Image 1 (spheres, rainbow, N blue to C red):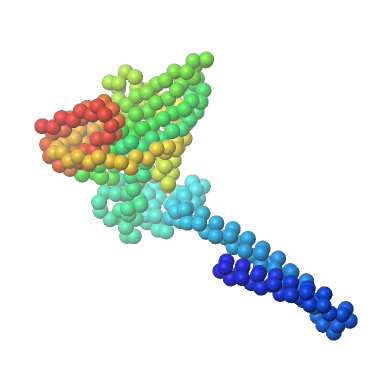
Image 2: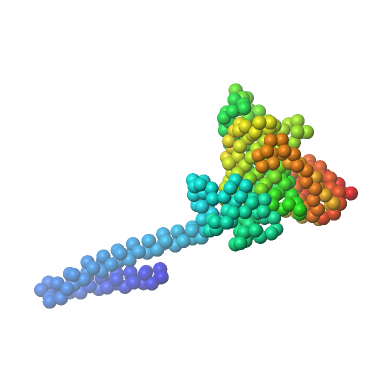
Length: 327
């Protein structure tokens, strides 16, 4: 231990001092002079080595404390994600691998659907089904780099998750609403644009698909956005897409800046919730309506108007100006 090292250093210093005193009181021709001359340098060298070891132990303690802050599982998953990006896919485009330790593949629509399809249970594991950044109140920021569609320079982008719903009949997807804003630079002018978007997040693909709500005249450029999240679920590579052709217009790399951990839960009754989806799995113009019972819904923000009918919904509201009507 550190106290033992300090004790031994003290002993060596005292021994060296006593040896020096004895040397002053004895004649140079003493029979022990040669032995004393050999011992004193060794004591000094040992003291230096012990002091160096103490310094190395302090560095080791610091590194151990720092290493304890790293999530081992998350680090391993991230490394496997990097390797997967540079290797041939082990599963078809519509399937996912049952964890990096398995060679089994299942449909991404079966991930987090409430039934174990992987033999190792990976598809229903709590880490696999973690909502990650898909929590009402979370804010992501990044920079948009345009390559086509509009001659725009790079500009900052912000995305705030306002509503997250988990449907009882199809829990493999989360229905999501978000507010997206950007400060566009045109010439010497900086123009602020923002709008409301809605879509879904798929656990099996870690993919968020959002389309603008067209009744919002201030919608951000009327472009769809598709985000593929990294394994830490806090970073994503997004693409702004043309609504009609789905051609890529810009790349956006976003990082979660704010994580909302304070949720006020309110239980209401609802018969069904209506959600609309665009851009379903890359098919052009696909439009889906979802009706379900027992949906779990979170809201965050201002000015939301939500109308529910029936029983079984769990609704969370955050912020001011929310209006909820039940029948």
